Image 1 (cartoon, protein in one colour):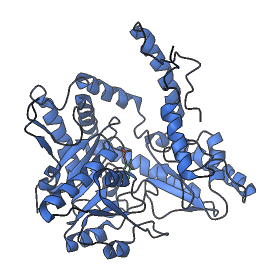
Image 2 (cartoon, helix red, strand yellow; image 1 turned 90 degrees about the vertical axis):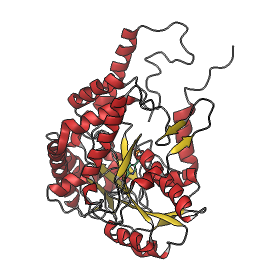
Image 3 (spheres, rainbow, N blue to C red; image 1 turned 90 degrees about the horizontal axis):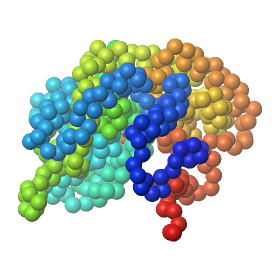
Image 4 (tube, rainbow, N blue to C red; image 1 turned 30 degrees about the horizontal axis):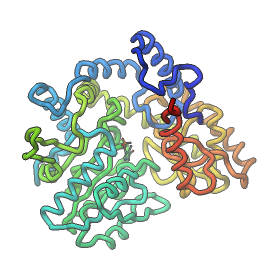
Length: 463
Ligand SMILES: *Cc1c(COP(=O)(O)O)cnc(C)c1O
């Protein structure tokens, strides 16, 4: 992968331009770059990331965004609209997550900047609530090995000990017995995913809910990925277990509006069963000379545009719009999974729905990735075991994409069979960054980060 493909074609700004450039020229440059990058996923061959893929919808969201892009959602006296948009986004999300079933508290939420933001806020709420209510100063959280790294990030940032529970190698669901055995007096919450990012499988949330209730601790369900598609799959009659607020032990759920909520990137909701838990992480500073300060979450200033666009996405789709998109996605995923199952060399992990992951016990699955890449496919790569995953989104529901997948996969399996025993070219990095994972993995990911962050941004030599 070339991290800087534009350096030969467009001016590289190593310094602030002395004289500002004309708007027309800038917009033309942006349009050229965007068209090139959109072409990559418009084919439907790219897993995840572009959840909607409909330029009409994007233009509509951008128009909504544009009305409030310059507004600071922190300053409500001049933008009461933000209180409306945020409140309604939370209310609509609580509806989808079945907060109507809650009788033991007042459900509440926060709009955050993304899945990581939602997970951070939930973990902060558990930590601060447990400190205030139970006097816990050395908290721990028990999470499945398949839970998103954002939980480790939250633990890292907030001084929480992460306890990583193994998963069943067949179902890929967390080992609830292990979880039960590792809860102690300092455990503030359990975590389960619905569904996890890697395999698209759902942890035994009902079992975790029972455990959490029994032991008097929290249970966070990570539905960042599934929160705006699984409920619609349930309505459509797919066999998807209950994982939401209908389970009495579920105390918080993260659901990303910027994934299957089809909003713009930079928005997500974390929902709480009880308002007190959410409020535990509010920040107040009453004595500052700059004035009394409070914020509902970690961020300070936020763009009002994201709230307006998220709200616009949700109200423009409604239950019928989300159901319509979900139906097409589930059907497309089933067709693609059938193609995988038609090859005895390939094995799907667990019992997934819209997102599936497959491996091979006969050859390194990255050979399949190598071949499919040449055909324009971009999967997410996994490890332990090596596997490829496809998060089916709306671009894959276009005519002919599932068929192309089946045809290319058949050839890829032949290619991989011929190379069984040889090393493959590509490897597992979240987000589809460069392959070629050789040597020390830790050093490799550090090198990727350096390439992305320090290359062209380095200052020119003095003089
Ligand atoms: C995407 C995702 C996250 C993290 O979300 P970001 O929006 O990338 O911060 C967390 N959990 C799951 C299951 C996800 O799919």
